[in-house]
Length: 586
Image (tube, rainbow, N blue to C red; front, side, top):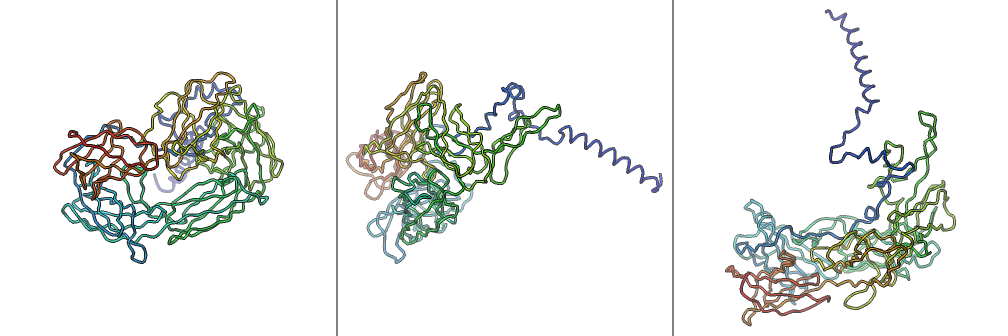
């Protein structure tokens, strides 16, 4: 065939291919085929009652406020390896003028061949420290022959300093480069509402403008990381707020949207060389929708999920019937997904400017809204209420939730040591049964949201059916859990008070035949798993911060491989000094 006849043939082939492609696209050929593990149950979708919003449309509280608890419980019981390396690390910590600083926490973290080797000590009156760094687990070590290390120093006021990563010479001791510590401080201030009065309960987010080098102690093995430092606090009844123990850095302070108002423009503050900052935060109430969520008895419902949406115009289907108007969630960046059944779904990753949880008084507030008709919905568990049409800048609205015939649980949360109320805590209901004993592997992050609850009072409505647990968490405390049986219709189970056990600054003086042992590895085992590790100092005392109260088995390993043990009970106090007599045996 010559070139002249090729043109028509090619055109015909292209036309045929284009037609097939169009047919394939219209038939859904480009739709991603879900894997079997994630494929939706189409039968279940078809069986859903008409007009019911799919369950995944309803954002759960944990999608708005992530769980502040992380559990790092080891999978297997701990086996002591007496051949693991140990290094005696020495150095100095001074202020910017070269003056030695006493009682500064110092942590060595190894890397490369020393990965997994770490230890903590404290400076003496001259700013000098000597600590034993050792490895509890050899599995984390690298095959590299290079021995690297970093030392970080932290002061009680949040000040910190660190060495650059340095070479650790072969042997069982090393001198670390000196550390100049930059003092930390606090940011405190007062928040006022749109009327100029105290913004009681306002949620304030304090975030460093740049990543800061900090020691991450949330896992059992600390490590130095560069990350943004964030604190979330709530203003008290006078509108006062404070975030303490902040490392030196520049910070941005915002009032998050809530009933008292918000501030769209962040305030700036500088924490440097021990200087704290004062911030006056004037919250605005521009273009708002505010209100309160109550239960069937007229009591506030804290922790309810409130969402904003706007209805779309009704559409006409192919059969000429009107399709029910979809509900469109207004999210930042218009990140909205359309489902096959024609309903707009909430994007779980979208910003929370159209989702909130009610505060301790059941209140909510949205701001900077368009002047259109809004749908306001509140939900907790399966109970839901809606206001189908609400304009901005109107009087507060009230949503009422029929909560399992009015059943609820209420009580107060107090500090187990002082008896005083704890006014900022996370409260969650957990279905089913489980242990209520303190769990030292459950770590509470201090940069999550802990709602303000005046006088430590809580009220849990619409609890799960059957047996369930209530869990309360707050920074500086071990999580508290209470097991409850199913509530009957309309049952008001009041007086379920909970005490939070403070984490303990633990000082232990282990002795063997009446003598102390200096610079020896020490482990605290809980349920035969390694919960904390440290080492005795030059005086034969071991100091471990942030220990959850409970019963432990203390293990001490001498340099010759001899293992000694003792039973240890850590009290629910912020500071305790305990003496134990060691017995031979691992």
